[in-house]
Figure 1 (tube, rainbow, N blue to C red):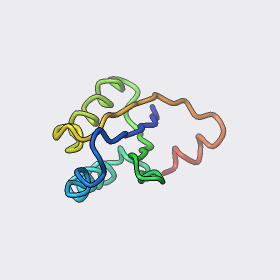
Figure 2: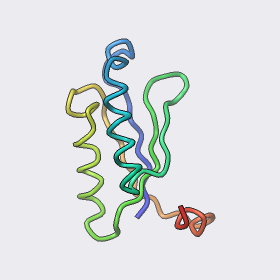
Figure 3: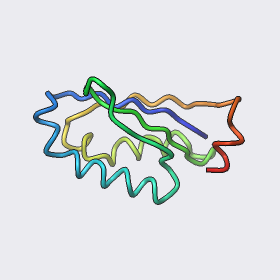
Length: 97
């Protein structure tokens, strides 16, 4: 299963900025595990987006764990919106990543 996650800061970016390195370290671990395909901040800087891949079985629980494990979540700095996504065009390309 693929999913799109929108992360929206709950605090001004000046309060979020000191925790960005910790958040990115978490995302790098997800990337190394094959769960995160791509991520990055939005412009203007109100949050960011993630493209995720999780197993079809237990998919929602896996997405919940990703959200709950993010330092931005545990520190109360951001909220996640996670949308399971079923790509059609380009799915073969994504599957090869």
